Length: 328
Image (tube, rainbow, N blue to C red; front, side):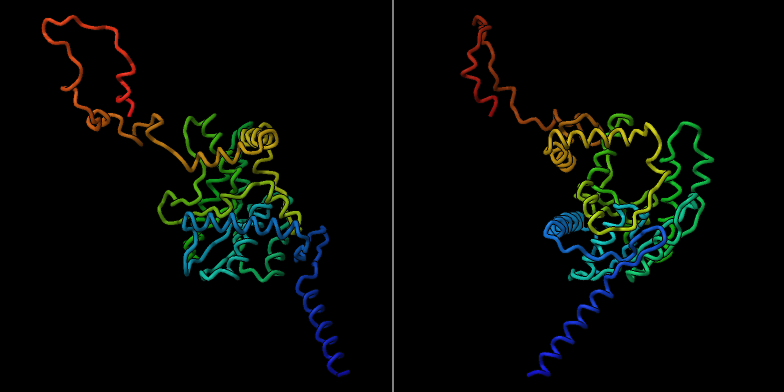
């Protein structure tokens, strides 16, 4: 009996040692936590459950990931990409659908960018990864006129590098970290400044028709991602290029969305729902709806309509009570 108790204690101590070695924080000189310990609070588990549900629904609704897929997760070092990678890795472990996950980061040779942070985080957590090195930072700065935003040039250069690499490694899907608020911000940017009704689709075929792009965070709110990243203590790498310029229109739109969310909590949910419930016949785009064909589709026989017999006096006063059939 005594041996059994001691054995149980030894087993318990060994288990605690094993768990602490698996999740013990690994700190860097900059204070980054490369292997954060998962939180244990009830608030964390509620948030995790919510994120899993939303990401799972997005994957299901748009058939983002299928059996045997190789998903290339684009990781920038920001809160969005860390959260997306973390949730997809959890799904990889528990989902009956078998798929691969590989993380890919594009090192844009931005001055002051800590090159060791992402590789160390990915290695400490046993995540397969690639680091692509391409000086898109200098090219972007060179090609962008003074006073203009970097987004257009920067995004094109990044897309070309990442999408081409996805084909090289045989990735069947490319996962991007845009969330629900990004999608709505893009919608309003195009509405206010582009004169078009379009946003970021949850799933997209690239312009060269060689890559399928997915956005697993399409249903997730930014404020939940911020909370999750803080709880998980991801080693966030700040970016002083994309989105950091003063008076950037996207930043102004984001401020507008945050104000709406604070003053009218259900408004953003309603707007995103509208993006999923489009009626082309109620808009004015002639390419989406054939307005000219409406005459031929009308179902009414004008030969039986009211007419004045010969010799009768026309009656210009009509009782609307008798026209009730017209609205049926």
